Image: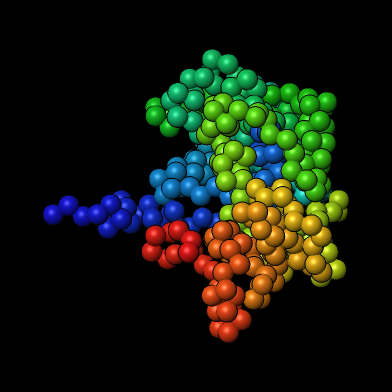
Length: 350
């Protein structure tokens, strides 16, 4: 008898990894700041779009991470003095919610330049990606990786980087030394500051939902589909503000939001969906710390839930039910504290 996929060994392992999705990083990472869409970066930083990866992809990430130790061992075996690797990585904080971790720092011993310090960046590639890298070089083939190294060189004041790539299909290696481009790295940092401190969502890279860069983007639904975030946390709340000193402030409670990303990811019951993360217009003047959106043509209150106000979780689960004004829903909310939740069986709201 053939077992269902989720009961096989492979299915069980992949489910384990898929269920291990971590809370997103608190800062805007140097590793993605080279992405060419401001809106995507803003949505990522605001935790409005959190990509969920299948187990197989999670295992691929693990393979890439584990390869770093192998590369470091090979470097040391041939006399390269490489430090700040693994759990001792050098962490760079640019302020303004921007930072990253360097794979390693080579103090000396690189045969191509024995006495020069280098930022070290380690990557793994599929055969197709690796062939393109060999043909075009890192700046053209992997501009995000190139931008990442530029920021790390800016942050460490080390003016050379070395990019070491491994082909996962046949174990070929590619090595390229990269010079620091001061102007480019400063422009990247300024772009990051502009995005992290922006209260409103930037324009998208393209207005064409079928364009390949948009079509396969994790934020496609946010830009061209439902236009409704599925995430309720401090950063998707209209009351929160990212500050220049790298902290977050809550206007609702007139206090700093704890830096702990777990706390920020949970949010509070007073959450109000940011107006750029919903498809509806604002419905007149909000009341107190509530918001009001025109859902299905009806003003619908969003905030701390009661008989007539719906939490952000409820609105995301079923906006039409929240807007319906159904007397039975109101009565159940008044009498029993009932709430609208997604269906546990079908994954659809009711």
